[in-house]
Image (cartoon, one colour):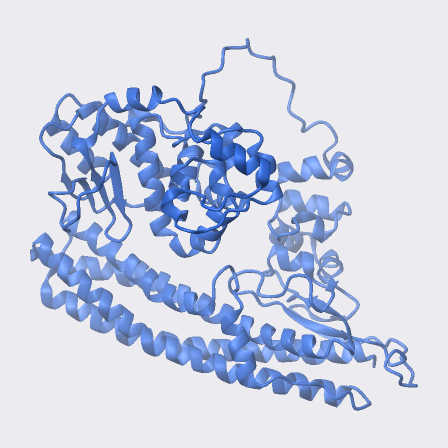
Length: 611
């Protein structure tokens, strides 16, 4: 039997036992979570939520938050201990396999368990470090509990009804989140152990091969990468996504290359799959081609399965980053196979060109029906509008302008519908907020991500603000500093509020900067835009870990991305997110180049309308 086949065979068996080990670990974690949930429900029953005043409810939620954090401590400790044990086991197993299969002494260098554990914690996966995954468990659980409690409280549900809803939905989502985190963390640890072993023994390893699980649950990215090889220090590594089951094997140099005189003729072996035994020569592409038509369509979908049977390779269904192409994208990229399968009959008929109309200064794609938010004539109607559409509690000051309040409600409601956000906790002036705030400087509005409060300044602003924005001379603003960056490629002090971070825009950013020539104060032009900006902070608060893993002050300021947006975006990465979100919601796609590609991708993936 060939050496590569021996290693593959052992690795597949080991992966099977690893999946069984993951299941046992998850069983322990779920038991610990159940004990914590029972205590939390007991706290709710003692207080009787439907009888509490709002201030008392906030106190209860703070106690629940502390309880959930404490409840997850044994869960995290157990998972962390399992990761530490797995680190030591995986490095021993790797050495045992190599020593047992290679017919000569290779002096295989095995890293210690502590070294693997440290590497697993120091290396991010899915954009987050291990500690971030730990923190996200309790934070996500509390966010779901808080949302269920607040929704039930506002709707007048009893404590029994709220707890029942949480047991049916919230508890299950938190359990699945913990299961996914545990599976992904253990897969990450196993593959870090392999990678560290490969890196230390690169003198005997030619490449690293991706091995996917051969069944119908394997994702597009793992199907495409199965059987592919990369150099030891290059290329992607599992996990490719949460709950990934893929692994890797070393492609050891041939016995002849290692100086061993032995017969290296390839001999076929077998590899476990859902349908029995298959040849080790098969990768996922060739394996799926041998499966029934119905199974292929179940895995790929009916239309993509047609293209697959026509000869389209598995790796042509995804991009280099592992994102699966849509049918429209495949049609543009694979014209030959597309025409073989579909011909020209499915091509849309050419439409008559519409009469050209003068374009507005800023195009705004109307994807939200603003007429669904009723008009208001006075402040009492504006107060009720806020409660009906966007917030559980309002605190509008006397003298607030109803038309400006409606514009803000329209913007907030649009963001909530498109990005699947719940009602906010409070909307109104600072003085009436449930939490005490310091007065801001000259902002028209502000948002507290911590408390989910939309805070209005200057009585909610009014239409005069739009005149102020529209009459500002943006084209000449900050022109001198912007020109200096274009000419020299760097500026020592990027913006007054950023301190001493040195800016040196990358070549890509500088190339995009030439499209603008100047930087404006802000893309905000209307009251509605102010609403988009503040709701950008709110979206950031709901997805803080994911967004912060993409953008930080270093790449917003240091790499110069905020130069493409506005001076206000140069404050910090939080304002950069709010400003780019405003540009995205304005809907002018010709301006989307100003948004960091990964952030733009995040907006589009989260946007239910996907404009």
